[in-house]
Length: 123
Image (cartoon, rainbow, N blue to C red; front, side, top):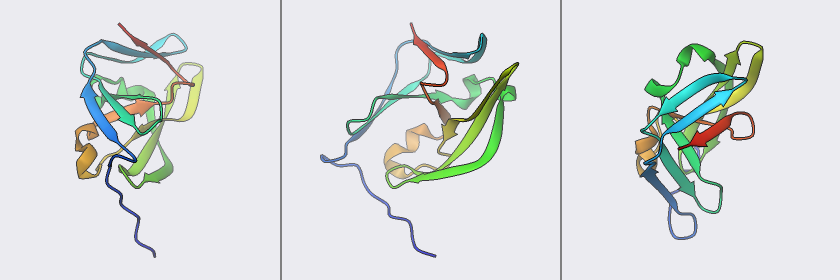
């Protein structure tokens, strides 16, 4: 087994995390999946910003853990959930870094949603 590459954010690959002062609501198929005023906005290199939502503000009964996983050398091991809301079944649409690396430790206990699969509104 090979060891996983671990990288630190730097000037060539910056990562910042800031509290989002706006209310963030995640919906899909008319169902509210999350509603929070405690979202974190993670900005990484030139990727689009990602809203990380406290798991406590997510309707967890609509999330089903999956066996899918991925790895980011800056953030760590990533686990996924599918959304099951009424007629909607969106496989691996939500992700979580349960034990993120120290530079992004703030996202522990938060999940993020693929914006092309859900509606994300900030107000």
